[in-house]
Amino acid sequence: PSVNIVNISFWSQSLVSSLLQHSDASVSAGQMTDLIHTEKELVQSLRDYIKAEESKLAAVKSWANKLDALTRVSTSDPEGYLAHPVNAYKLMKRLNTEWSELETLVLQNPSDGFISNMSVHRQVFPDAEDETGAAKALMRLQDTYQLDSEAFSRGKLPGMHANALLTVDDCFDMGKTGYNDADYYHAVLWMQQALKQLDGGEESVASKADILDYLSYSVYQMGDLPRAIELTRRLVATTPGHQRAGGNLRYFERILTKQLSEQDQDQQPASEEPILLGTYQRPKDHLPERETYEALCRGEGLQMVRTIHPNRLFCRLQDGRRNPRLLLRPMKEEDEWDSPHIVRYLEVLSHEETEKIKELAKPRLARATVRDPKTGLLTTANYRVSKSAWLEEVDDPVIVRVNQRIEDITGLEVDTAELLQVANYGVGGQYEPHYDFSRKDEPDAFKRLGTGNRVATFLNYMSDVEAGGATVFPDLGAAIWPRKGTAVFWFNLFRSGEGDYRTRHAACPVLVGSKWVSNKWIHERGQEFRRPCGLTEEE
Figure 1 (cartoon, rainbow, N blue to C red):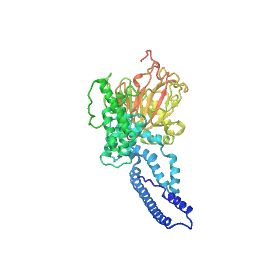
Figure 2: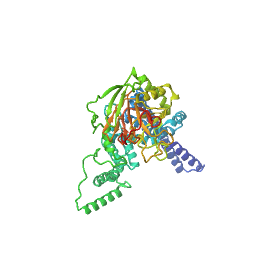
Figure 3: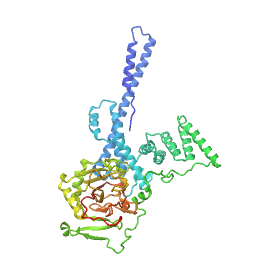
Figure 4: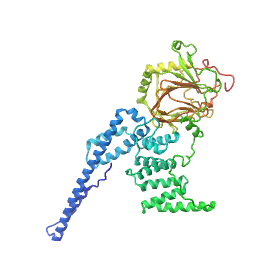
C-alpha cells in the first residue's frame, strides 16, 4: 500500500501568511467575504490533511498486518521458507524496494524511532543490484527447467506446495529487469504474465498502459510485428493521449508494410494464441552447449553409465590401497561413470562435520570467484553464481580430519592442494560448464601457486537439494545428483599431464532448496610417485 500525501500543512501556512501580509484596517466587505471563503477552504484543507494522516496511518497498519503475517510464516522455518526461489526473490524485493516505500511514507511525518531503526538495519539490506540478481536468478531457473511465468507466479514448482505468489507488480518488475538489460525475451514473458493477471482482476500499482507499453516494444524487438501492432493498438485504445503509442504504431505499420511488399505477401492477422514459454526462440548466448547442459539439468538426455566394463561391479569397498586408517572402516565406492572414471564415496562426512564446516564458512562467505586465465588472479564472473569461503587447517580440527580423509581415499598428496573451498548455491545459484584444470592457452593460471595444474577434483556434497543442483558433464551426458554426506572424485589430467577435456562440467541452478558443497582441488606437485606419469598422451 502507498499513499501520496501533499504537503497540505505547508500550503495552508503559506496561504495564511500571504493573507496576513496583504490585510489592513481598510479591508472592504467584499474582501472580508473573500476571507470567509478562504477560511472555508482552509478548513477543507485541514480536513484533507486529517484524512491524509488517517489514510497514512491505515496504510502503515496495513503494512504492519501484512508483514506480521508474512514474518510469522518465514521465521517459523527460515530455511524451508527460503528454499522456495520465489520467496527468496520476494525477500530481496521487499527489503530493497518495498521497505524503502514504507520508509518514504513514514518520513512524510516525523518518526525518529522508525527512521533510526531503518538506518541501522539498512546497512545489511540488499541493494538494487541484489534485487536485479534475484530476478535474473528466477529467469535462469525459468530457462533451465522450462518453467513458464504462470508456474512461477503461482508458486507451482516441483515438489513445492508453499503459497508463494507473484503479484502483477512483481511480474511487471521482473519484466522491467529484462527490458533494462535489453533481454526482450524475458521482458515479453513477464510483461505478458503481468497483463494476464491484471486482466484477471488483480489490483496493481502498474497501469495497463505501462504494461502494454513495455510489452509491445519488447514483442517488436523479438521480431513479431503483427502482434506488436495489435498490442500497440490496445495501448492507444487504453490511453489515447499516450506520448509514444501513436508514433510507435505508425512506425511498426510502416515497417510491416515494407516487409510484406518486399516479400510479396498479404498481411496476416496477429496470432491470438497467448505468449507462452516456447512462443519465441531464446537468443543464443556465449555457451555453445547451452541446450545440452540445461537438458541434463532437467534429467533429460542422460547416457548409460556402463559403457566399457558392463560386467564390473557398480559398487565396492575401498581401503585406499590398504591405508591403515581405512582397513577397519573402508569407504563405500560407487561408479558414476566409466571413462573418465568418476566415482562417488558414501558416508564421507558426518552430519556433525558438515554442520561444523558450514558454521565455519558462513561468516566468511563472499561472491565466489574464478581464476583469470590471463593473470592467474581470482575474480568474479557471471557464469558462476554462488557464495564461497576458504578454510584452513588452523581454523578447526575438522578441516584437518577432512583433508586427511581425502588423502587417504584418493592416495594423493594434499599438502600441495588448494585450501578447502566451501560453496553455497542459493536461489538460481549455478556454475556454468567449465574446466577445473588450466588449458595450454592459460599457462599462468596457477603459476602463483607453484604447484602445477589441478590433477584431480574431490567434491563433497554437504546437503540434499529438493530440486535442481545436479553436477553435469555435457560431453558425457552424465548427471550426478547431490546426496548429503557423499563425495565425487575424478582426475582432470591424464597421467601424461595432458588435460582430459571430457571432464568439462557444471553445477546446475538450484531450483528448490539450498546446496552446500566443499571441494578440494589437488595439484600435480607431490604426486610424482603416487600417480606416476604415463607413457602415452591419453594414458
